[in-house]
Length: 130
Image (cartoon, rainbow, N blue to C red; front, top):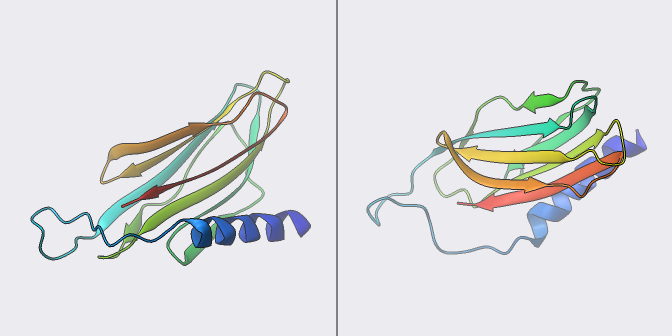
């Protein structure tokens, strides 16, 4: 329960600390567009992804009791005018050399990739601004 609360608080903190921008990803400078967003994570062989907290702006989602070396979120639709896509992933590695890699895809294009420092207890917090 504490771990789930920690993840949710971490996600909310990340969302609130990312500064807002008046720049929108508008192809023609006109109406803001929606975006399709998918979050992906992969841990070194033998590791397990444990929890994920992810979302777009204040629309937060959690996935708990996960297992396996890879994970993908369902596709989310970022509404027109959305500002941030954020994710917090926790995993366990099979050795002190294990690494957790997190990716954010927007409209099927890799926009952000971040990796943890090596270790047996792994966490990555990252975000992408539209």
